[in-house]
Amino acid sequence: MMTKSGIPAAIPQKGRKMSKVLIIGGGAAGMMAAISAAESGKSVELFEKNEKLGKKLFITGKGRCNITNAADLEDFFPAVTSNPKFLYSAFYSFTNEQVIALFERLGVRTKVERGGRVFPVSDHSSDVIQALRGEMDRLGVNVHLRAEVKNLIIDERAAKGVTLSDGRKVYGDAVIVATGGISYPSTGSTGDGYRFAGKCGHKVTELSPSLVPMEVKEWYAGELMGLSLRNIEIRITDGKKKMYQEFGEMLFTHYGVTGPVILSASSIVGNRLKDKELTLHIDLKPALTEEQLDKRVLREFEANHNRQFKNAVDSLFPAKLRPVMVELSGIPEEKKVHEITKEERLRFVRLIKDFTMTLTGLRGFNEAIITKGGVSVKEIDPGTMESKLVKGLYFAGEVLDLDAVTGGYNLQIAWSTGYLAGMNAGVEGQS
Image 1 (cartoon, rainbow, N blue to C red):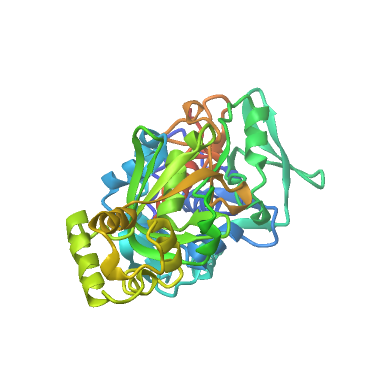
Image 2 (tube, rainbow, N blue to C red; image 1 turned 60 degrees about the vertical axis):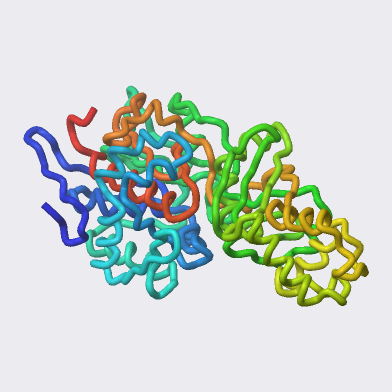
């Protein structure tokens, strides 16, 4: 049975009472949990310490909000870099197709872009937030803004309520912690959920920034600042083996590199980068083999055989990249093209196919899209999101030790785990 929102309706079972659910956090997971719980007929109170809902959601996808991905659901699991198996129940209970259908029903028309990324047609994340807020209002969710939860009320290993920063105590039958991580702390993600979990005896795994820009050693990063490269392929190696490979887009900054392929790479190689420097290999012309590229370069040289080398490569690179490539080639920039040897030309071709930089570290949490690590999923029931240690306590979204590459997968984690938590929280007899 489907509800008006397009969320599968809960089927009340004999002996199970629908009751009052308290939700901490008004981000993606918290709002979805509120809608899911309210659709189940529960009384829902949502506490958000900021002055408005969805502050981090507002800036996701560069303000466009990459809602989910249109890929086949089985393709989601390889995109999850931490504990993908834990998400089987969540992803299949509330799928990417159901997420898209929900937003379409709420008046947010969607579109699919490169890599299956799903965005609002309007390109405004505010439309997503407004739709969720409107649905919560329709369902009677009581939203409390500027309401910071300081502690959980736990009695006999069961969650009974929350204590607010002003000292007020609010009691309920279940508590859902959807406080996010510690990335973009200006949005209110300051690690409250980890503190709540730790006090309850939960293990919090090591936290590190993820989907984050990376720093490089080479001088020419600064020279290339602001340059965006599309349709390139990157590889990252540790000197012995390949750790990551992807085709797409990247951007140079004054400190290093960022952009979709770099951000996704950070979630895979970040832990290794803490221990040692890694090598970034950039294939600037991945559509061409080395032999094909050599023929292309040879044609350029033949067309400019009397010009200086530095003036003969205009069509091969963006303007900002040309002087760097000329210098790294080892060919004197004033050398006439017809004087360039075959060995020099082939070395230049190999440089284009393997332009390298040394990765030295990750940027900080204030630039990270998500947090890697969190509440250990070993202590969470994957079918309900309930704590195995504290009855009536649920976790959803980024606060859990779950993360994925870019492309809408992390928001799908938030929607799916929030949905499951909301559907199951406050159901009497739930274990």
